[in-house]
Picture: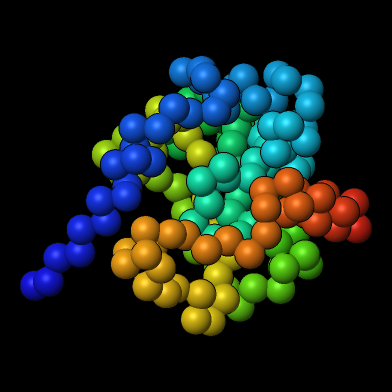
Length: 163
């Protein structure tokens, strides 16, 4: 078996998190500035946040407002709302970016890749041929649009969707 050594990941792992908080998923909605927080949509029990460290352009996080670590800790209404916002996020990305597919899932627990101990789901748009050698060999992730420009694009499309 060959092993790839993406040493650039350590810089990401050790980087300070924004905001400088132990609870960014509860602090960001409290800013009441969705542009700064990169929140693109809110529902009664959950919200969609643009990932500041995206795997692909448009990578969204689906997050319950109530801080929990496990799916079982959400009540049925919160679980339903969270799944509805995942569906909404997929529809939003489809309308705005027209991807060829999606990766949708939850990282549960810090060992599963969730560096923040708070339940959140990922909605990652994918395009045929979007994986390339740049992250491993070039120590560079290629994103075709800035986070701010992507926020503008998504929030322009969001009002056209039925929530």
